[in-house]
Amino acid sequence: MGKDKLKLKSEEYEFFKDRLSTVSLIIEGLLQQHPVAKINPQVKDHISASVDELHKALQYIKENC
View 1: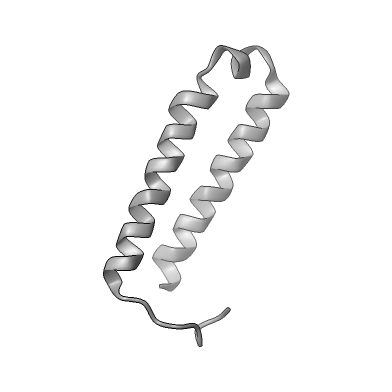
View 2: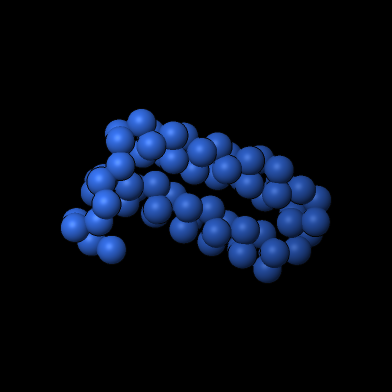
């Protein structure tokens, strides 16, 4: 959906951005720092990539909504 999407209240976007940031912090703090991720670079790389995608989503919301 582009700019012609259903408009939501600004509070909905603020709540979404807050939850997205919270989830990103949890993933970074609990999963990336977990010993399993530390000894398995491939696991840590996948986790890092997912966090990067969440940050992209957050940036998109900030710029377009």
